[in-house]
Image: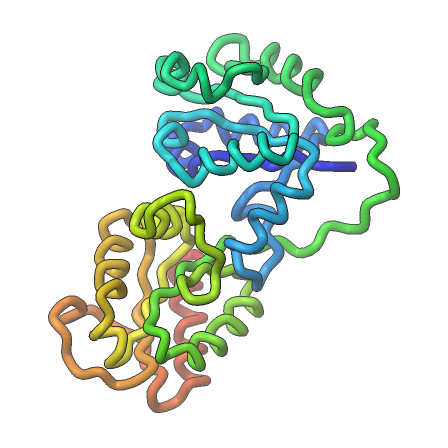
Length: 281
């Protein structure tokens, strides 16, 4: 059986129960879905896995909410699906999005559009009937699919200076063991359809946590302090990891950090406990 790649905004999912209800009802009906972070294999680069998930999909389910309308990265998924010839289905999940539909008339031209705002049960039934046959239980895509791989807990945004790459390699191994994917500027694929700062904003907003790797070079970087401050502003949990002594700095003054400089194993043990304390493990 195939699957639908699901485009959505985390903010719409957080603020609107209809979106999660729809995902549950589709899965209960046996519809194959693939979305970030729920269906990411653990321990991989999120930015690499996402395009592969879209390229291998039998359809794109575009959950159009208020926040999604403002998200350039999600809009790029719609454009890529068109280029690949993947069937696209638009589902309106918020009242604000319904009001914005006229502004997106050209973008959605020729696409089937369903609204979950009226007769929800009837809309879900109609939606399932219109989906590609291969994403439904009785579809015929070919060989029986193997058991699903373990799912990721989401991805973390790694903020660091290039000089700390050796420590970050060890950090990625730890994240894989704990079931997380990751995104970092040095290793992850860039979205060249948007400006860097806009891409970073969306990546940080949707991350499970930000891991800021502190060092003298972190302090010199023109980006890392901004990434830390922005993470705090949008409510993404931040963990400060001292990989090399850097001395006091105003931007993190008074903020607790996890020390890896004396005993790295002890540092990872503490990071494990802190992630658990935050409910992230």
